[in-house]
Amino acid sequence: MLSVSDALNIMSKSVKILASTETYSLKTSLGKVLAEDIFASLDIPATDNSAVDGYALCYREAKKNKFELPLSQRIVAGQKPNTLTPDTAARIFTGGVLPKGADTVALQEHCYEHAGMISLDKKVIRGKNIRQKGQDIGCGEKILSKGLLLRPQDLGLLASLGIDTVKTYKPLTIGFFTTGDELLQPGDKFKEGKIYDSNKVLLGNLISHLGMISVDLGVAPDNLNKTINLIKNVPDTVDIIISAGGVSVGDCDYVKAAIDYLGEINFWRVSIKPGKPFLFGHAMNRPFMGLPGNTASVFVTFLILVMPFLFWSQGYHSFFHQTFKATSLFSREAGNRQIFHRAKVSKDGVQLHKNQSSGVLSSASWGNVLAIQHPHTTINEGDLVDVIPFNSLTLGAI
Image (cartoon, rainbow, N blue to C red):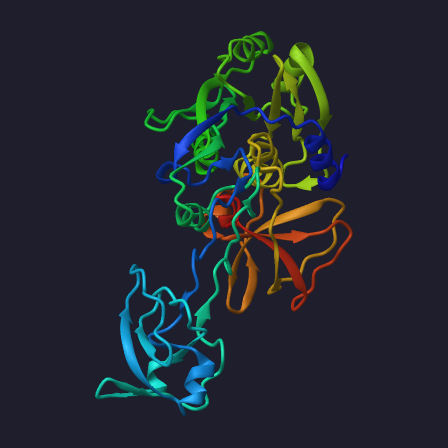
């Protein structure tokens, strides 16, 4: 079996950016992937300006006049000031443009104004309280790079430069289907021996949660020819195909055979728990990922294996799983596979759900992280363990 890292490495090497580009307004660009480098067309700030409410002055002249100066003008943000009259000070407010001839702003709390004069704090420091032109962004500087998943702060930065539209990759279209004659759809009348198809709802929403378009391809029955036909008839608009179920070694598991017939299997089975019979390949000239049928396995393999591939194919090439350390409130004997325990982090540490069975989706609903147990590694209570937060599904871990 492949290790998780080896599986991701193989998947990354087969990635092609599948999405076309389109220009979107900043209002509709959140969570999309930037398709161009962005360079600043002006300085931010555009001019030297005051960082505080206070008094703008020439330090040399203030010192010469024993820090007693008449006021010559009043400057508010958005106003173009006059050149500072020699041997005077200007009342200035936060964001106000520093007048030519001034090199210092004295904080108003340290000054005393009376009869048109200002008494300055003699401890005022030359050059203090000024935001220099271009201190945030210099004209011509590259501020955002192609392949960035756009976050609110990135869009705010673009707006600060007067940019109102941006070229991004269009969201990928992901087709998905589930497998099995035993499946009922939510809303159907329950029948003995049947189960409700939670994987379809789970997969569709996991895809949509990434800002991509999900297309429900239906349910493949336990029949090889019908499974092949379902995959052959996937709409041309679908970029990537995902299935849940039918990739293990049971007599009614036909997805692996169907992909072998229609395309190629790059690998099958990964040293991951839950989710060992994960399949990655290509069918009908499109990437195909076959997930196990157990619902917790679907959740874990989507987060660990599917999500990176989808983001890379979307153009978000720098995506990686963001982890942090937490104190273990549990103990677990070493295993042969890399285990992703459904767990919950609190201020005290990380605890495991009581049932780690691959079919127990309630463990994922209860939890907020995956606690990682590396192969051949025992975890003792009090150890620091790596955890991946579930909210890394949101905007690629803002």
